[in-house]
Length: 250
Image 1: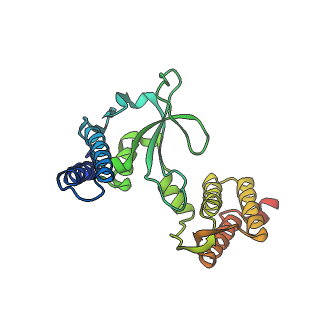
Image 2: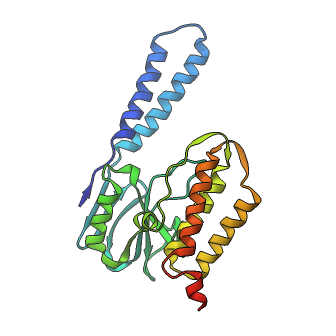
Image 3: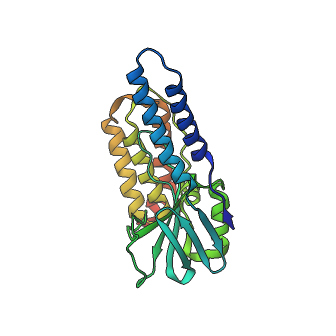
């Protein structure tokens, strides 16, 4: 499977360059400020355009991965791969980050390109791809990796959704602090994925303590009623997931 580069960055870069040129061509009052803005837009667009024009290849096949992108040009055989993980970084200020593909190399493979950590066990990993760079959807990339990489590959996006799919929370004035809520939801999801009873108990206890104490309020945050409902459902899932705590104790 050959992944196709996303052309959105190139279009945005062209808009920046053309916008800057137009500001320079049509003078008006406040010429100095317009010139500064125009030159900045042109410089930013030019840098982005050069990056978008650089060679790109990401091919998933029976022998491994063929990668050619800025910062990484390698042919990676499957026997050099210990684990492949498709995951989404934690949200920041309520905004989701694009999924990324991480590789944990086998022992003995050079690790000079290590730039990340396995999201579950913390092993040193290489960031192979951020999925907003390509036109294919995460499900399509996951299907190709499942076919060719076999047991080396784990789609944590799908596993996390299957464990507990958190809805998009409404953002408004005077709501719960978003980073705090997102951390609690991710903590609960990871505990559910682990299948470990003690991890579920710890996550459930942390969420219950946080909600009893009162989640911090921010000027701009998540809707309090929706958040309370989602966290309540997450606590219930942590208590009832497969073997309950009562069953574990017997």
